[in-house]
Length: 253
Length: 253
Image 1 (tube, rainbow over the protein chains, first blue to last red):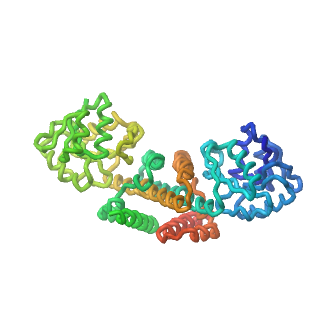
Image 2: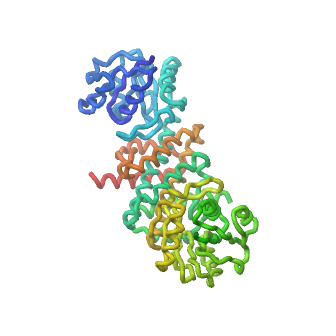
Image 3: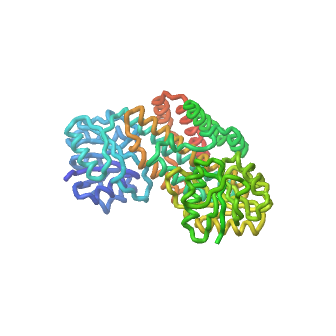
């Protein structure tokens, strides 16, 4: 049985709380947060705590707060023996002041109210010492089949890769939606295409899956597309991404 | 029973052939193509034809060739009574010379050898006359539950939107993969995130689903990310997309 305290009351804290609560080998003994309103959400799952001095003793302290607040929150745990781990992709392990420190980074995008199946979510671990790593591994393996050892530098790069494949991709979906709206077309028409685009790369490499005017070097279609947009930002994005694709595939000829 | 001749032997022609062959109300009577090698693929499904003068009479002629070849292929069908329709997103209906003309555009990305379920694929129809439209509607509804009337201008814009949400998105996946490779991380780590990103917009608007440093206006994280890339093109794409997201969400404040 691994005992856990979660520090933080946001999106990720909620998802972790729900998952830990239904996992037999994990005992979520407390959730710590300063915002009483947010903290109440957790009351049906475990004990609540809003004063640093009242934080319980546990095997693992998971800090699930915004990147800027991690260092400060970790300061409340200086006298604790359990491993103190943050859950951030972009933050080095060494901002934590505890000697027994680590990282427990679930690589996924979490939406409030939308449940996720942790079993398929990659959990990236790092730890200052071997003993701490073993505890984090036990915790991660109890909820996920995809546990990886990832150091601070790799995690930073992974987080960057996630910005391209999640944040920027979502922004492109938004441009697609805007184009539909302007032309009185339902965005639903694009949804099967969006699904298939993401499904394809489960079995094909993105490079093999690439199609479209830029891939073919089809200047006529690209110029026509550019003339269809009046939004300057959309044009710039179209130009830059087309140029990048064209250059990449020209290299191969 | 609707009789169909497919003109073309590529990816889309193959997928249409397979779907028509298993649909009771459709009779695929012939596939026309100049490339004997490609044409052979269809021999187990229907009759083959490689001479324009041998093209059979049918209710519908579906031209599934590259955009540049549509006009020429449609020239082989001047004496036919059935409706002549192309399958291209970017091509106006009026490049077809037949009086009874139309468009039958399935909005999806097709991969050789990877079967697709046509039922969920939106099929965008346009026709010169009412009678032709009815035939195309019967054909489309026989294989798909998502049939839309879309005119030439809307279809052009849809095709543009598809470039953003399919071609460009796939290119961003490729950048994610390249970052992983450089840092000795398996691309598999990003796949659940990519899946969830595309799943999210089935229920949330892209604008609501947007997250990340640019969305938060988090300059520190953005600058850190920029310093992690040595590839100039990646940096440019990061900068342009981040700036676009930042500007969009600043507008709302």
